[in-house]
Length: 190
Image (cartoon, rainbow, N blue to C red):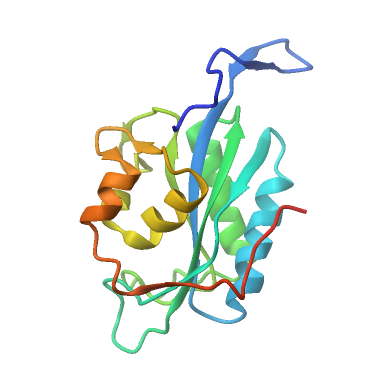
């Protein structure tokens, strides 16, 4: 379920009185450079500290083989974070990129899927759809990626990606050979 349990719940801006719907958002976290678990936990903490964002769930941690990455890339740690928010999609994307930057994400190489200290991808925001040069919603490759689907399924088994289908069904079709659940590692909301 990608909407908040009651889509009629709204939050009122305390200064303007403007009513804004609360939407369920799903973000995928990944790291394959440096202190991987520390980076993921830092991202969870930073999301939880974001005004108008309420973290409602954090998945187990998975170690995954890099997908479409340069030769010699190290394994990733991946997780999914569920949150409710009244923020616009563009504001959530801005926050995700600011968190990546705070953890030393280097985009200077220009290499696609280059190793990174932190990757924060916006997967869905309610049933919003967007396709422009800034953002695509739902995330265009999430329905094919076991490293997104498996942790998401673990924390929200009845989830659905708009226009793609149920996460459980998409997971069944995906290649899960390169992912391993790491029960010795965990993330938590502080």
